[in-house]
Amino acid sequence: MPNVGVDSASIRIDRCDYIHPMQSLEGFFASSVRFIGQSQSRSHARVDFVARAPEKVRPSKYPDPATGQKTHNMLTHDESTHQLDHAEVVSGRWLVKAILGVLAAAGVALYLTVCLLFYQGQWQFTFFVPKTVEPSAATVAANSGLPITDARFDTTEEGVQRLDGWWIPSSSSATRFSHFAVLFCPNGHTDLRDNVEALKAFHALGVNVFAFDYQGFGNSHAGHPSQNQAYSNGAAALDYLTGLRHIPADHIVMYGARLGAAVAVHVAQNSPNIGGLILEDPQPSLTAEVKREQHIHLLPMWLVFQDRFDISAIVPTLKMPKLILSTPAMRPYASGADQVFQSATTPRQRASINDSSTQSLYAQPEWRSAVGLYLNSIADRLSSPASPAVP
Image (cartoon, rainbow, N blue to C red):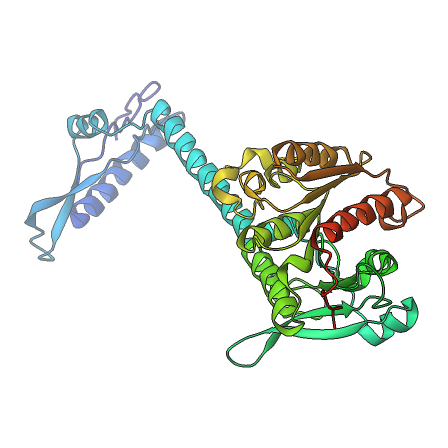
């Protein structure tokens, strides 16, 4: 066999066209024989295989004559380039806008969720229910020395008495205030056993006193307290005194402490014949107080906060004698008490009580003096020899 020069020979495969499998196999063996023969003559033959990346295939229009199945042909270079040119490319600016849109929607959803949670739990910003179980009236009476009578009232149509209260009669029927009764509305942070000091102070003045627990407090009906329920509870307590105790409305003095001041004002609005109204640290509205909480001002309070206990428009309409008590040590409350006093119509009185860290507000001489003088003024207006003592 003649020598074939293959020093620089290269077998270059630029592309692979489709060949029938049998033809491909026969061609492979033939090429191999020729290549081996050439390799034997010169030992430095070099074979370069330059393969192209596989291209997409497309189905053939004609079936394979051997198998009867349609074969697949490779896409041409022009067709591949055409598909690449027309491929959709996502803009980076569009991606940024889409991400920002999703984040904005998530932020709005989170904000609305917080607003809904605040609306559902707003009572926790105005009421603080003690967690411990309230002792019985007999236990408190034995420990305090007060003649407490436990009273269940506010009976429903099913016969359930929803509210619990304590009736403490005057120490003597001969005292000047024995025919008066004070209806004590608590501050929304305490139950009956926490107000024993106030009840002692009223009892020491010789006046009858009736105190009660809001719904959700103490031994009253369970449930979450609210503004409307507190107003309803206060009205039910007044009905207990006028209906079951047969005390004339003009011999009843409403006493409201802080949040209870709003309850007393609303009850007095619907019962203008009551004898008097004493407000301890009243606030025109609780909205400003709640806003002092951190981050609460970020919420639309006008929409989500409904338990405002707003009395700013009611106090100027009340005609009965009023006593406004303020404690300068509680500055936010003192400023609110000043606003309430300025808006109140005559007859009105005010007193400032220096709260002490070692002594209860109700044990302060200023408190006893101010309340005693006010009750005397009520008694002067209503005193009558025929006035019977309260049973």
